[in-house]
Length: 282
Ligand code: SAH
Image 1 (cartoon, rainbow, N blue to C red):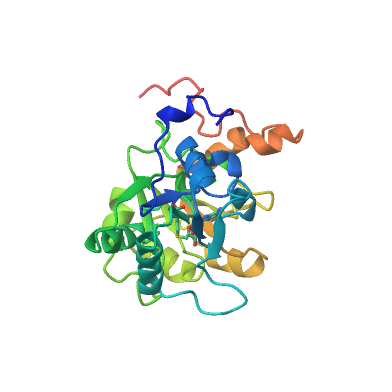
Image 2 (cartoon, rainbow, N blue to C red):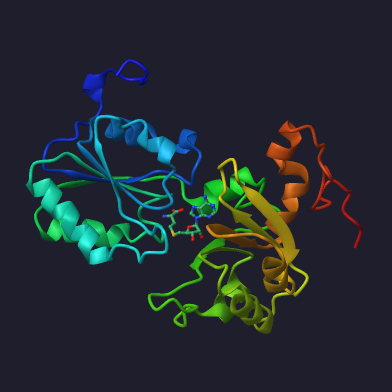
């Protein structure tokens, strides 16, 4: 493994009969970890999800590539079937790489797959990845925490198992307790989510960013407000996958939209939170 920064002998070996459950990051292949690359180079089989960029599979030319996501309007493979397929492949002596978008343990059902594998006696390794709610926002110029804005951040899924807005979530608690809210899978239920947050006391004027296909060449960012979120999504041509970020951190895009800057567009505002001004006397 000449291009890896350590000698090949120091990298873990993907042994036959093992499954490595691995995050592929949010899209840009450069956001893979070195452990992921090491795994791709050793696998006999790569089972990957819809959100994994095909270019990443080019690093595993020796492996069989099995798609385990939604395609052409067909329903996605059942979770239980995927887990059991991993068990079968491992038992047949394959080196199995299960590749999932972002981080396997963030809204990715990686915990369920890993549990099934362990329950069937299949040895596993977990390789974390950069989650879209962190890395995707960074590519949009939004720091998920920023000292002047937030001391906490809440990651929320906009869907529950039935496909509805999660009814078990304490939206009032989230609205009160978390200055920045990052929503995965939130496009469909954006109207309900914003209404619940506003009802719980968040300002309708609060800044919101919707980031789609983050970190890929197709990345789009729409800035709006909590009150306008649903209408603006509907009026846009934006499609999932999308991360929705709610909170003042979004304003930092005015200075940190590094991709726009790299394309020659100067920053809109060098001090969007006005922290550079002398503090007003009391
Ligand atoms: N395990 C993944 C999340 C899987 S759930 C992770 O850690 O990122 C799928 C949801 O993730 C999508 O509906 C979307 O909300 C978000 N997502 C994943 N990749 C994304 C991307 N490149 N851009 C925007 N959102 C993304």
